[in-house]
Length: 323
Image 1 (cartoon, rainbow, N blue to C red):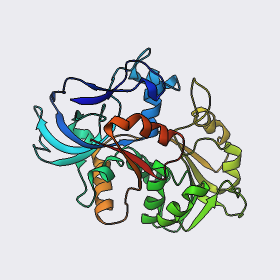
Image 2 (cartoon, rainbow, N blue to C red):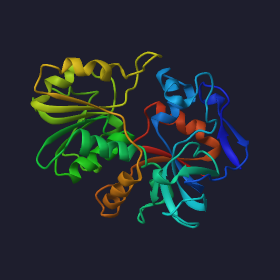
Image 3 (cartoon, rainbow, N blue to C red):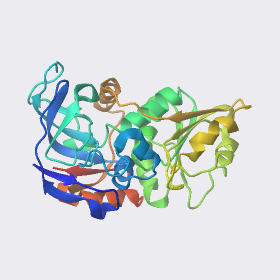
């Protein structure tokens, strides 16, 4: 089969389209004929091996343990391994795996769910990581409820674009923060107000927010606390920027101490990949409450360009690779 493979960590130049052996499903796995794959920031981190903290999570200290890139997938079940009971050949599914930038990939049964009937494969492929992360941030870490004021930083990105829609679905008043080129997208997603951070400061309106969801990874905690209600909650999703050792995760490491003697709360989020949240997401998508925002679709051979496009911050919403 064709796949996007890398032997060493590095820039997109280390990625190659090659012929490799097709995988065989083991016990508890499904073999998927890939129709589309999502591109998220995690793909860039696994490609570069940066920050070094990523390598300590089991992805390979000196070289990638899994050479095929891509983790979000949508496709058709080709075969199932022993013990699989939820799927059979021909089912259209989506979820997470290791190595979705390929014609075939194996995924654990508990990491996939049936594809929403009202989405294309490209739309479904961009949801498993970004949308589930947003769901866990809004619903679980943030505890967003009806009538709350919610500020979403990075609202025009992958996680942020889903978070805006989810917070609205839970009845919140949502303000999105993004760059000029993404303002119209964030408005179209249902945000009640949009702050263009290139023109205005998030504290300029004087509004205090019950929940702040920061997916952009670079604002000082002191800035976030100034616009947070006295009993409000800050949720930080991942981290970007920073040094080679821990990247932008430094804020999450020091935040518990910054909030220690305050009525304000901090929640760091490490998302959990589970089919139960995929099924919850499917219900919201099929009900029309959430729809993936797909900016561009690249063919498999141009996966390196897709990763570059996303990492440079140009994507409005999500980027997909079609197979």
